[in-house]
Length: 295
Ligand code: GRG
Image (cartoon, rainbow, N blue to C red; front, side, top):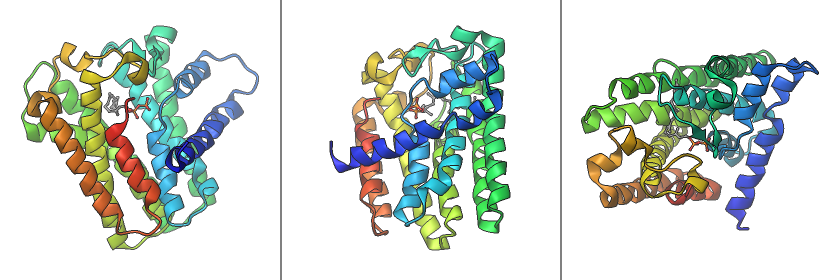
């Protein structure tokens, strides 16, 4: 295994090992369908891309990753809640996610809504615990960014445009706005919260912002390409769902080959941004991974 994959695995395992600690503590030995549903989606797989990115930034600047494992897990809770709600019959009505039946298929719609709500609220319990133990202005600013970028000025703002764009051909600016918010903002939050936690200077934060915006854009183009060219075993959901749901995507706007070119150009540009920093190998390889991932 090359050193990038070994390090990715390491960070990923750290997240996986700690992911359900908080729920287990509350659940104790009681049977509880809500906690089961929350755990089901958390442990159904997933690349852990956002928490890995969060910890990788901490590591690149010499921070102590163990100190930030809880904030990394909280980001994955927010991501997982968004997937559960996005899959609901009233939203995208998807039956598979991460290679397994979606939460509402297994637990029913009522429990799935509560499992999503539960994950979102638990994320904030974790973040507030962290704030109580680390009460300084830069830490609170980082936590604030996670809230803003996953909220109505971020991921939820993208989701509403997505819903309102169903069965419509939308223009490129709207498509970019949608994905900048829906997909990009939580990726941005994962990076910029780390930058705040480490109290980096403004110029470094600006460079990291450029890097993560490009990574978020590339992540979505790759997602659109995989929806055309991927395999169920790798992407964990049926191929061709965007087409079936009549969605505007980067492929419907640019075509497949041009989308691939834009993806590679975007990654090259993100790499230029991160080269500004020392100790940047992992973040360079992470950018390349976004372009070459098959799931
Ligand atoms: C319901 C408020 C609310 C928001 C939902 C993020 C989102 C908004 C929906 C997810 C649907 C989707 C397919 C988005 C496109 C890109 C994306 C975020 C894919 C899923 O993330 P991955 O590839 O998934 O990191 P894993 O399973 O690896 O965690």
